[in-house]
Image 1: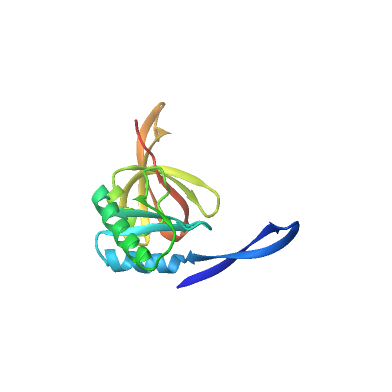
Image 2: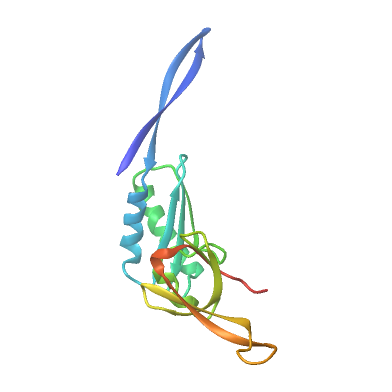
Length: 179
């Protein structure tokens, strides 16, 4: 589906302002998502986002069950370009990976990050951290070590605690990168 938008431009002709219009063909997100689904199907690579600017600047973000390669990005880029070029549309296209510092947005992304440290903001505004030890589609299990007073005597001991978080309670989830 294409949307046509007219842009009013005023030209000076012999001292009189005369309006004229330029018609642009805007590309819709639904059209790009359909092209992505056509190319990727239900395979290990999937789209995590599509952004389209008013100037037809298209940004597509990919992730995969086992990561994303440059070859994956190039293949999808060529597929989208071919389809849009056939329609004679003016556009700019950028296909890239989801990004290591970008928050996870789909349940499918958690599986490959088991064992990594996470920072999670919950819908109620609280924040938590821990190592992802399990994800079953509906909830995640974080594990973290805390120092607590000994139950008997003086001193502290290290205790490993598990926290179960329902996926629908997560507002933002980021992998903590270690350098």
